[in-house]
Amino acid sequence: MATIVNMPRLSDTMEEGVVAKWLKSVGDKIEEGDILAEIETDKATMEFESFHEGTLLYIGVQEGETSPVDVLLAIIGEEGEDISALISGNAEATKEAPKAEETANKETAPTAEATASEAASLPDGVQVITMPRLSDTMTDGTVATWLKKVGETVEEGDILAEIETDKATMEFECFYEGTILHIGVQEGETAPVDSLLAIIGPAGTDISAIVAGGVSLATPALDKAEAPAAVKEEIAVEEPKTVATTNNSHGGRIFASPLAKKIASDKGYVLSEIKGSGENGRIIKKDVENYTPAAIQVADSSTKPTATTVVTNFAIAGEENTREEKNSQMRKAIAKSLGNSKFTAPHFYLNIEVDMSNAMASRKTINAIPDTKVSFNDMVVKACAMALQKHPQVNTSWTDNNTLFHSHIHVGVAVAVEEGLVVPVVKHTNQMSLTQIGAAVRDLAGKARQKKIKVDEMQGSTFTVSNLGMFGIQSFTSIINQPNSAILSVGAIVEKPVVKNGQIVVGNTMMLTLACDHRTVDGAVGAQFLQTLKTFIENPVTMLA
Image (tube, rainbow, N blue to C red; front, side, top):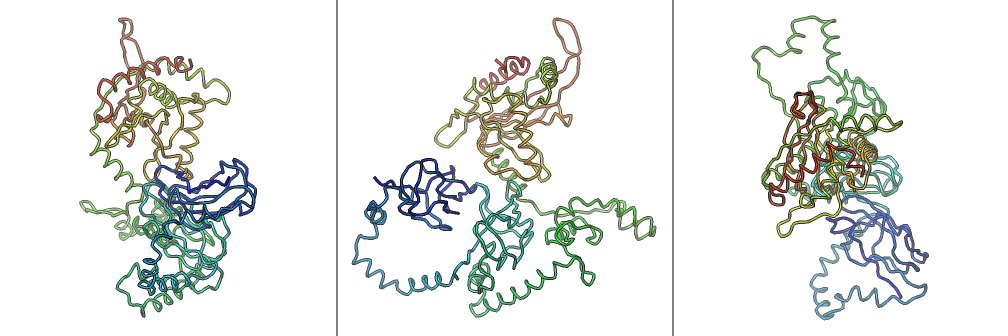
């Protein structure tokens, strides 16, 4: 019997999906576990496997098409099986009231013709690429760097650009083959999700009608007669720029990306003094960020020790100066999420001091094992996971109507990066050993700092740990990383006099501060959680039981 396969919900926020690529064709034999297609969700492009066996009889959503969740995607059954009833049943609504439909068709004939002409205006092989939604909270994106230019041939899987989202700068790959005919968002520019990013198709294809449509949306005051002329002028200007940029030096011109120029201008750097590492010596964002102006100032002062040089390099006493710097997508996201958390979740804070003597001795013993490295932060993360098992009220999330109790324990670890802060998530932390947690945290932190971390590696936390002990901070409070109900702030280990068995001795202690959402966690619950956490950390052997 034939089985209907609907568009799956591959993420909790997914409303619709795009079939990026079909890996099976109609008539192919399907086994349970076979990958049917690659589906682009609101978070990532994911493989969709079959849970049925048989022959692929019908495909309802073609490559590149978008379909809502739970709509007919494909039909699997026995070879030669009649599936006409299943296909027609999927469109039953269109069979109702045929007379009314005919009347409506007559009334809307001009509109239908216009729509058909618009669809027909898309040339064969041409694909319109829009600004992707690379995270669940992304509303717009900034093109940090274009890795391909107009006129270049691209293959499926090539990286087109680096796009700065509200969480990280991520590589955006191409799902099509052809030539880049148009770039709609230049380097350093910001555009909303689903706006025109680029057009790919056969070389020489006329895309003026497509671009004109995009221009009319951006500038509604533009007349129809003016639009084609504006587009032709834009394309004519763009092509010489692309060709000229391929030369490292021509007529004294300095070649740099728009984003690099803006950053250099904001910081007061001279572009001619910066060495480019891009294609043919082109200056890119990384070159400006890594540039050290101090060397330039020393050189200038040694060659021209004039009064003018002193004025330009050093601020005059009493002079006021304010510099503006555009907020990155990450900084905007941090401001939005933490602002919402601080002003919607009623925070309260609990402090506890932990004796770290046994933990220090245990860590020294563990790290004496070859190829083994465990940090104090790894021990805290492990202790949190085990304490959450004993206090499930802390492992919750608040909604307007319900409190969500999570049976899984995913601990997020706050990591500072150049642009701000990200929270990689160690999944199923309670099931991992200390060495596994240490390896996972180092791997995720490295990816975060190198901007290689994936969206799904930063989502799904049920509890968060933030550690500033390595900076010598003894105690601090954190803002809850919603939808978590709590976050633990970890301070530095301090050597100080402590009382043991009535004697004053030298001890090593560490301060822990738990920020709780009072909507889900009461004071007594938070205090009991900290007591359990203190027991695990002070007696690390209990975490191995």
